[in-house]
Image (cartoon, rainbow, N blue to C red):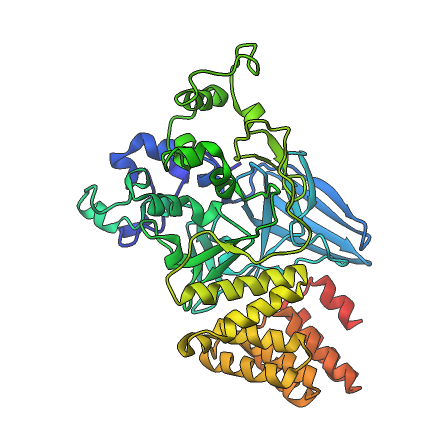
Length: 517
């Protein structure tokens, strides 16, 4: 477990503070109770070094592989044994507060990869990490880009302009700034006017603080030229990205607290007074009896309870009205149902199996509303393989104003639509245009390579794949695809040399070794 003492919570992201002083020396000087209580909170412990966590063993039936987790005073290791090969890595960091579970990261050079094994608190056991469930062959090859760390760390330290190469240490714990905004001016001249107090902010600004991590939705769409880390407390979320919900989904996701609460009659009738901070205080005194604490909040409105439904005195409200339910998107995850149902046994029914267009949580400013909705609709269409939604996405994206139609994400989206319609020549025009606007983006160049290959232009495909590898040596699929093109041209030895280059960079790569055999 992450140590709870305040000295262990380091606040590196207080810009301009000499020596990267920790919370006790900075925020704790004026707010000692809040700082100490925050250090014990789940948010403060959502990333760290895996100390004293349990070991275990996991068998993956699809591949016949075994993952052995060892944990002792020297640290944690994850060992994957598959097809006569072995990959063993020391675990560098955990991600997750442990309420649902924890995933683990290994470091290979400047890169971070997610382990295929995660620990689930509800079952007190190990199983596959989300994202690995459909794979027939396991490996430590799920690369961590900076956006993956947004909700579990305070800040990332990247190498240059990359999004997946990290300095050491690669990130810092979540600090006070995540909810209160940049603290430099407040430290220099403490005032209520130069720090964000979510509880006293405008409701949209207030809710955006929580929504940045606790509103996952069906898809999130970044605004043009924005990064997840551009969001700052004190802003509306839509200044950075938009969140879209699926109309036909009523399941309980692992991260769906905000939209569930919005569905509740309690929140709808409160006029905005009932919000996350009503029941959750990240730096409040830890209650000895959480159920009794929540009940006190409930009875502040519901002073008279139905005698028929409450024939016996009740000590708490949540077990009946906010029960824990299995998450629909993460195995072994049990989350509190925030819909606050009057009769929990009456569950909402899904509208139907056919996907419908997503709806924005809050509309961004025009013309981003059409652009973001088009990209979100395309994402949902792909997820559900829905032709009607794909056509709607095309309509939205092809009728954008000229300046928005030339935006890189729009160009790539239209390129993939042409590619899926088996028209690689048209797709290539869009991919090439996107790559010209973002020449340092290896993913854009990879898209070009895929289009060249689909068109049958193996020469340009190989040249472009080599360019991808030069730009981002960690991009496994570029090596494998290049080797496949060589195999198509019956140049097996050249393909083997490509795979050896990958294995030299990642010598324990099981997939790399199996591909090169």
